[in-house]
Image (cartoon, rainbow over all chains, first blue to last red; front, side, top):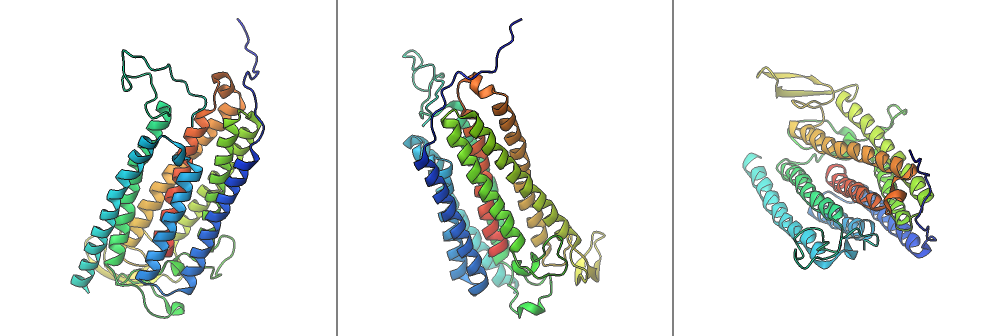
Length: 109
Length: 258
């Protein structure tokens, strides 16, 4: 029986410093946005404006994670759109159920 | 994108979608991971939008912060519910612990993307190093969540007097400590139910993620991917791990900030 030696046949390429730098920069942006959200949670009054800002900042963070970390932007366009377009339906679900919730609020209180 | 594609090449007899090809210029495994994540996004969206909808159907606590009392008449303020830290008893530290958890998960996402980058370069040592950091981040996050749940379930020392329908279908008024699916000392029953289901479902995903990370770390370390000729598995597991982070970003905003 042959014992295969655990030797790599793949060529190791040098580090791409520019790519790594971009990753750390994205991480910095994500942390900065989270810190801003934190500060807003303690300094601003609760209300529609604050909720809107929170959701906008969260979607902004989600964009960075999907485009930079998951490399969705580098995929072929048909794949990109088949992931992004179905998510547009969620916008309506948010609006519809927020409306429903506030109607229940009016009925109950 | 996939530089190490394993495609057999387009056969004119089979056409683009006949199998053996890469119609989206991405491998089968990566496309399937993306569509699985899309379906999972809808599951989490259903949970989170339900939270939002129930949240706006209750009044918000409006009194002064230091006089906050839990009640099932209004929705609790998150920074007054999640304000404890492990090892420090009785300290008012609003949202600090969950901030640390968020930091840990985002950091593990960063080390994951560094592992993917190392995988593109076929650099086994770097992949193993960054996978190990990611694994550590995942386990730390899960441990934090276990503590968070434990604290949430056991509640505060004083508890809250609540009037509610108990599991025997009787209307009772008694002091409630902590939380279960029937009643909780913080707010309406739906608050604790949604907390358990949403963070629980997310934690379940993290647990599976930790298993996958370990598998990937192990296979990279013993040289399975070198033999295979590409490090695509790191990329696929990376997609899943980033997704877990993506969901947490939304859970954090909706649960702890709004």
